[in-house]
Image (tube, rainbow over all chains, first blue to last red; front, side):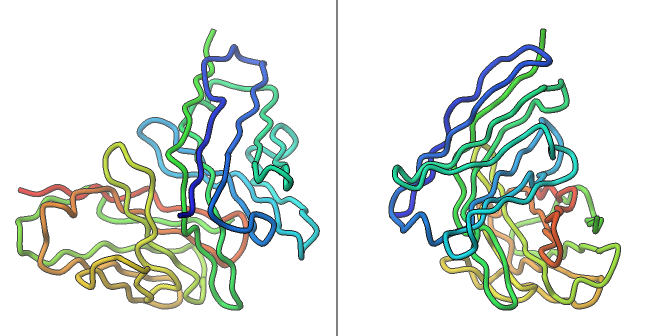
Length: 123
Length: 107
């Protein structure tokens, strides 16, 4: 069974940092792109970025809203995805999800999501 | 960025009815459109991918259609279990962008 389990959320002060983890199991981690998506309370889903698979060199891509502040990385030996978040702002308060990307020649989607971890940025 | 606009923002219908949710893109996305269902307290679940393809394990009462800039999600014979918020997603060009969501309730 494919499983994604996020952790690391919590309360952090504005300007602070936090690192989220996404422990994965049930699939060959290095074969897949992995994404981070967040949802602020009462707002829509927002894709933050992804990290490519082994075949594509584990490179990353980010949305403009987090580029330069957030970093996605992966520990392929332990099948864990990370999201390092720096210079946090109140508007970064959200539930953060990791998701597995399925990419094909003419399609792309998130087929498995974690349960999410909540980040609150407040003084 | 490609902007995704869903309507309506909320919807209330009776059991057994058929409802349609629409999603408009700010430019042609050539069918690169997914739908997700998010039930209260749960993470989103893939419903439709590539505009028309039903995800594994999802009910055939759900169907997707559309092309170019306009897409629709139809739910036939509404069940109480369909109560959820539905999101469309552009996957033509990064950043992948989502619609604002449609909250479906049962009358």
